[in-house]
Length: 326
Image (cartoon, rainbow, N blue to C red; front, side, top):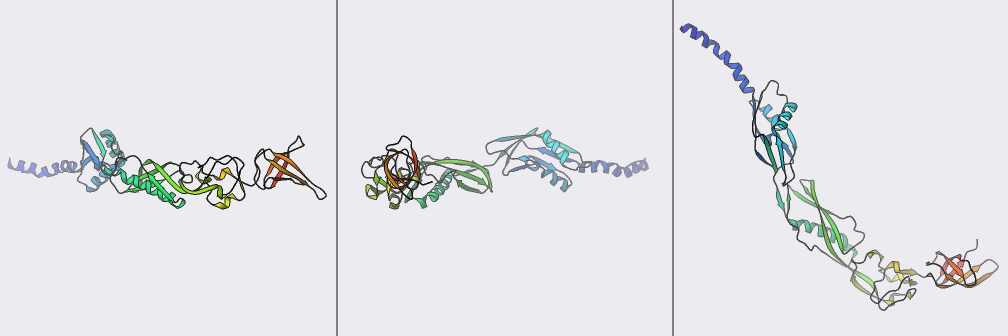
């Protein structure tokens, strides 16, 4: 009897080894219920506990990329079936068995940080002020509202301000501030700024009629806010632009003079001009009526005093037009 028992025991280790080896080869993956991640990509190791005798297999499974982390404030649900398919198709487990347990689906949320809204406003204000300051005597940029703090993913935050148009200045100007986390733009916020831009402008001392010959003495040079003017670049800045000049349209006392309102010499439609027709042998001068506005050197249509048909003539001096010899 003892010899029989001894005989059976001698074979028992050999019988138990395959079972032990199979147990050691089993990979166990337990899904968590809820996960808070602080990075852009989700891996299996983030959403489940992985146990395996082979450390290489364990690491390879844990590093499998599941997808992108949800935006801050959102919840991403990942089902067990999705993870089972991922592990089955993306790993080489050979004969290893996989035992799944834990939640049927895991809920993933992204960790967050609160970023000061006033820092975003300061970045936009500083950008706009630095862009406008060289062009004006004084610039003031204000943001009338309070920007709430912004919720962002964890990481280093950098701000980049930009504007669609800085050529023209307006009383209200939008600035976009791109917010990047660890070098990747996460979102952009548009900020409407109130702008005041002071510069020296020519202001009419008295009312001036259309067609009036004008010079610097007809205006006061004063510093005013020009941000509310639709075409700021249309404002004269030097007295050299007056000589000799006329007004295309009337100005009221206190009106700011713009370049488009100022015409160098030339004629206005309806002006009586001296019309000169000259050849090598003869020179004729008569009166004519300008049919359109024209500056010095431009060709305009004029109608002779005793004629029914308009002719083309070039403005050669203030109030003088000449028909060019063909």
